[in-house]
Length: 84
Image 1 (tube, rainbow, N blue to C red):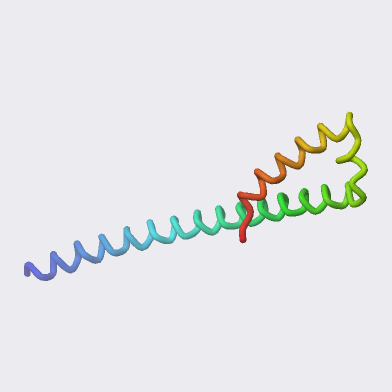
Image 2 (cartoon, rainbow, N blue to C red; image 1 turned 90 degrees about the vertical axis):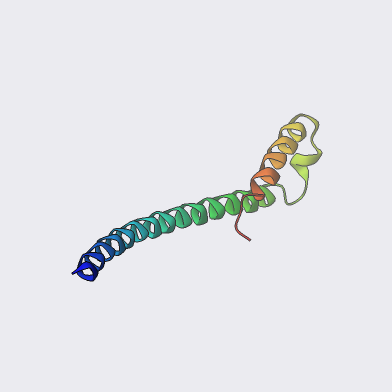
């Protein structure tokens, strides 16, 4: 009789843990998708910055150069958060 109660309790525990695990897996997949999209957006911004200043015109200009250098610093900081 005792083993029947133990089996029922273990079944309930395993079922609850299975639902919890499925929930965590779904949340993990959602976060992975979010991170992949963010990484793609960061890479696209980096490529666009390189496209804009292929000849180095903005970088060399005194007034725009300062701003462009700051934007490049921000992009370099963001590059640390991309998927590799």
